[in-house]
Image (tube, rainbow, N blue to C red):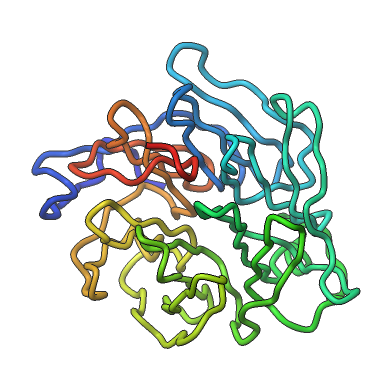
Length: 302
């Protein structure tokens, strides 16, 4: 593992300035994932999957435990009310937190009578629909879940509607992982860790998908696979990959890479002005100042 101060960042036009550096926010973890930033209360929540803990961090109070045990939680997002939605590997559940994590309710656990595999990453759109990926990692890796047979035969992508109806919207991924919507929510991008690719779907008003062809391939030197994914206000796509966070143009062209000292797993925009990129990378959480930002992580918040 390289020291943060020794990592050289190359500038990326409109994204990373000349001379930008990455710094460690917190360390001593085992496998960090799922960072989300509250845009009004200015705090970060993230998961340590292997240790089954979710943490909350801000500059004033430092690091505190948000939930333990977390059923080896992975990805997180906010719903339209600012409540945290979490993917759990060990339980195969998608859950929602009320009252600061003191009450946890299950949103989804089965599809067509079969247990979900291990919900991995999750987003919520402005209509309150929840989209999540369901690879098998939490059933096949002892450090990331509970070793057990799959009940569900596919590694799919799901949409959970506000009325509670769960729809399998795509069933032909090897291992779907990160996902994000375009700013106008007419396109859904989903990466496949075993691709290693990003696929793009068209989304109609009812949440139905068409298309799904390969939009980009994520490759290069260093450790890492397609994992977390976000879009900035200029419709650039950010995606974890070999060596750090890869930045792609709206057309899918590689623009550059934000280098990380460790294998990066996920990230989010936050901080003052929303221009800090917080990156989870195995044993640590890092931060780097950018020249861009993204929509607030709570859907519908201006």
